Structure formats: C-alpha cells, structure tokens
Image (cartoon, rainbow, N blue to C red):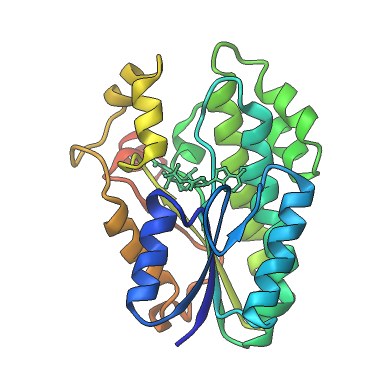
Length: 258
Ligand code: NAI
C-alpha cells in the first residue's frame, strides 16, 4: 500500500480520488484550504511552502504518488487567485515533493488539467508564457485583455501552462529518469461544486450550451477511477500524457485536426 498526497481533497474530484485511494487501503495526505490533514492556502507562496513541508513531514519524505486537484474555476474577479492556485499550486508543490517521489523509485503523479486547454479559442500564448516564467501579474494582464472573458481566458491559460510544464518536465532525468510518471488528466464538465458555481453564474447559460456529445456532465467518482488507474501499475508506461475524459467535447471541437 502506498502514500499519496492529494490537493483539493476536501471537494469534488480531489475528494473522490482521496476516498477511492483510502478505500483501497492507501494512506492519503489530503491538502486543502479549510479542512484536511494539511490545511494550507495554495494561493500564497507561504501557504504553498507550508503545504510542501507539512506533507513531507507526514510522508516521511517518501511519496508513492500525488494528485494535484486543487483548483479554482473561471470566476470573474478571481483571476490572480486562479493563476496562483492553478499554476503555482501545482508547480511549487511538485518541485518540493519531487525528491520524495523519486525516493520510492516508481511513483506516479496526476495533474488536473482541463479540456479548456484545447477547446477555448485564441488563448493568448503570451499569458501562458508569462505564467510559465512565474510572472503571474503579467500573465493575468495578457489573459485579461480579452474582455469580458478575462476569467475564462485566465483559467484556460493557467491549465495550458501546467499542462506544458508537466509534459516538458515529465521526460527529463529529474522526473522520468528518476522513476516518476508525470501525467495530466484533462476532464470536461464534471458535476462538482466548481461546476455548480459556474452554472449559477451569468456564465451558466454558456456552460449549459457547451457541446457534450454523450450528454450530461461527468461524474466525479468516475473521474476518480481514472485517477486511480493512472496511479496503478497499468500506468507504468504512461509518461507525459494528457488523458482527456470529457464526454466528447474535445473531439467535437477538434475532430478535423486529425
Ligand atoms: P472543487 O471546487 O469541487 O474542488 C477544488 C478544491 O480545491 C476545493 O476543495 C477547494 O477548497 C480547493 N482549493 C481551491 N483554492 C484553494 C487554495 N487557495 N488552497 C487550497 N485548496 C484550494 O473542484 P473540482 O471540480 O473537483 O476541480 C478539481 C480540478 O479539476 C481543478 O483543478 C479544476 O480546475 C479541474 N477541472 C474541473 C472541471 C469541472 O468541470 N469540474 C473541468 C476540468 C478541470
């Protein structure tokens, strides 16, 4: 049985993943804003370094895997927090945990991306580049130029940035070369509190009309099964991949790319 760190473990898909791992007999260190084994605010540098330190203490500097599910949706007015949590809340935690993930020799990481990375048109790549360079203010300004859609563009740019980061690092000596399988799970619209907030907002109509060929919204427990699969021996050969589970939205928009 393994030891897994799960951010965003208090709600939605992070909680569902943590529940499944615990039910399978693993030890889960849940990290979240208000409740969990580690309570930390991932929107601040201090909160992130605290989350890294406390998790490593609890894990004894050895992790079999990590799930990075903490995230903020495209809520207007929250653009800087979106960038902080969705980008730095992934990169800084994983950089801090990397030696503990390498220590077990065969570990697996699932980063929550999103199908918004490929279904949101014209996301400014200058915003993505700024996020990757750690300049969140500049990235926010660049993404925010497209009004009134600043929050959706910031959200998509944040998810593109972590997806790039994961794919770029996954294949390096520090990650794959150290036995760490780093992959991205990119869900579509999944029925969680994050989606409920969007549906209840002025954006709700647009979210409801977003094409989902199979119909309805995803179930967080089914997505958690994908997380468990991506942490299992079945994923020994899965490295730097983006697994899209979205009811067909991505194919609907991008089928012609093939
Ligand atoms: P959720 O809102 O149910 O759960 C997110 C968790 O992140 C919450 O427990 C929240 O407290 C935590 N969190 C937020 N800000 C934090 C902070 N500053 N510090 C610590 N923890 C913080 O969301 P959901 O839907 O389960 O999302 C999980 C991941 O999946 C997110 O990264 C989200 O962007 C992504 N995603 C969600 C989709 C959806 O339709 N629900 C679609 C595609 C991606």
